[in-house]
Length: 412
Image (cartoon, rainbow, N blue to C red; front, side, top):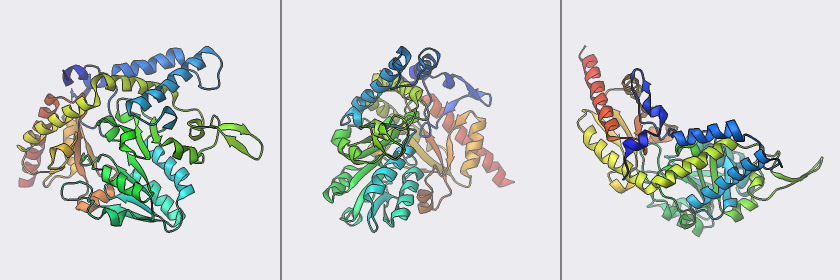
């Protein structure tokens, strides 16, 4: 049985208080909290196993290297990737996208080529492509959203053409929580010979993913959103594509031979992993994957769906609420963006903070989305495996307090 109250007991920070109130953490879309199992793994590494990897012949280095590389295999198996060599460690989703844009993109994008994105992208999946398009005199094209906060794909053949070289879109929205239909995008892109990159920062920690069946060319996500440490990200790419990409950064560990004027490069995955990596982060992520495996991503997603049903029922009791999410339950996740009539999102967030509730307010690094809907930003509550129904009750009751407080101000 999936019991979020039992799960919550594994997270030390969730036993703490904020502003004198029990902490209700509803900002997991930004970063998840860490269970004691991950924290203990990090402590164990730094206290008893700390050493650099790959080059040392002594025991500590060999042990750290073994744990590091076993995590690569574990990630490959967890997400049904092509092979472990197709898993590249980065600092996060942002760096993974930049790696593709700067390595694959600089080699393959020419003047007049087209890059297809969407208006709902996180800035980390907009700015790198804007920079590349400017450098290469390429053209950016954008998928819009329909009335249900899904990709508008009725004109897909006009958007993705023979000039398209890459399509880079989110699998799941960090604003609306929409689980996007991407299969037709991948199919159309491959029909015209284009590559597809999915921003999986939200999807990878909430949805069961089968990368080989998905047939995506690149997939990027971050460890810190899936119970792991910060500063560790993953780029998956089809092996033959990664092999064809030149190194993005030069340095130690990514070389085969080095001369004064030229060098030759190591094979995958080392070629794309210059310098000392976040060893502790990778080993901590391994522990996070063990935790997620025991619970099952499908069970986690089902828990979040049930929480969302409950939240929407309860939040209807709060006057003046506007929500931004799909009307189709199967397209939802554990992310709820909303606004309260006549109350700025920052004011909502400030009052909730005083009640011990952590939500995110603002544009969520999605300014084009906000401009498209004519709003300055939203309040965003996001759930995860440790979110309980009691958390939702406290959250909704606090929203009623916000409404009551600002109604008094309006009457003054």
